[in-house]
Length: 191
Image (cartoon, rainbow, N blue to C red; front, top):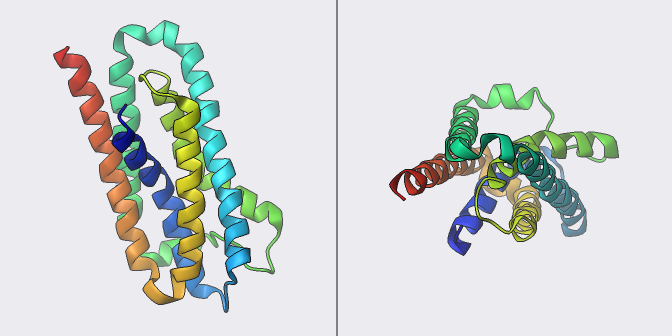
């Protein structure tokens, strides 16, 4: 995987957390930088850990599916991409019911739960990455860093730019995942 592909993957993986942070930033009265950064770091750490766990499981399973691993990568990326696109097209009324990022009234555990729920797709991507030629530690670090930056930025900019941009970022993330899946499949079928 090239550096550009890893960077696009990191942005795609962090786009759902960015969308959640952006929408939540709208409802917060004020968002101090340090508070937004702490939440960004928490999300980044969890988002970096989940592809590592997925990669470990995928690496163990690799010996059983080696002949068609490229199809598995394609299916995972296609499924996640379509799911992200669908999520980006849902109405904002459905999103408001979830209470994605906690304000000061919410507990630390709610933040962790939200971070885990936005990083489940990174776990599945980690499974797919076990079947690709990639440095998982570097890739997971880039995903975590991108998530930290995107969540912090989303919380800070929420009041200014709103949920619409977050939905577009999630749509972009879904399209990138589908493209990565198609490219992986194409490269394996043509070599």
